[in-house]
Image 1 (cartoon, rainbow, N blue to C red):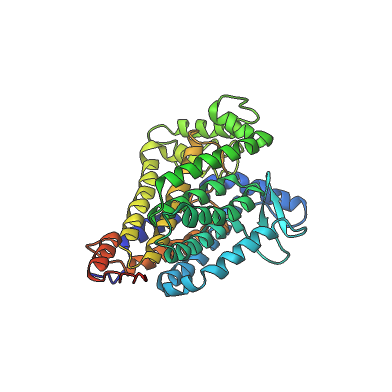
Image 2: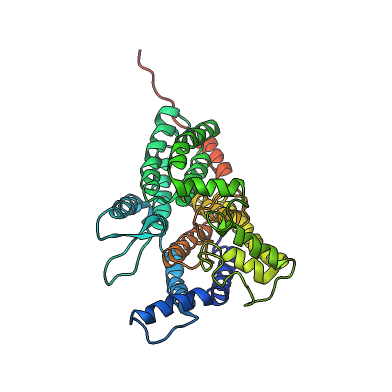
Length: 400
């Protein structure tokens, strides 16, 4: 039996996360907003400083994302199938453009933004995640009988993935590299790829990444602070230390909404990378647990949609998008809890960031679109076995 409506629980959870992000940014970004706008006043760019600079920018982006969400829910899925290759090529060109003088903009230790005059800044890594999902879904659908082959399945898959990974690593943006790798591996496995190939590829990638990690001081420092969070708490271990202080200060019930101490210059990127730690400080363990549950619901509903998808393309798209949201959330929260190395990834739907929010909402809309056509009561694998039983492949005639 085919559904006629979107997955309501999933839609509600995503909408609540967006609202939660707006509410938390209104609280945790006041200090950073004042610092930013005060600098703008000193440069003659504003008349007065404001505590709500990041709030209003995020609010308007969230408002703009609503029609994007509705568009993605009801726009025909076959369009994304036809546009997969052009979309993927455009994202690759945007990643290349980061290294062109006057186009790529530095932020912290990486060149991750395209910043052109009179246009909003864009982070191509966010679009690359969705572009890779589209293209891999088309590619794996066409090669469904070859995916398990090492020569014709895994090797071409690795080459394709390496194009995106290398461009991201050159920025460098190893957080996005990790998410991209998880997305691709989950789709490859769902398409029927060998787990041994995935394991071997992961071990080889880790071995190749080791010399890069050791050659870059700031990357090596991130791993050192991950292994020892108490290491150099005033320098390389500052962010991890302050995040743990924030989470620990929240206790069971939190210090109260708007009463965070760590947001006043102690938590770097408090409206972005470390918003989970600031929220945990204000809300406490019990209430922040609902945030964790929300991402678990997204993972459960998303993979259920993938299992009930009407075709292989939709199943792979749903798997990739769900893996993206689930694992990026795990990585962001893991970093704040010091159980994973620093990556600089946002918390999906919650953190400040225009490119991140809008691309996440677009992807969420596509996932909900797939849920409209889900076959309730049986999963994709069962239907494929039924089709094979009733429509066996004709045997090839052997010539003598």
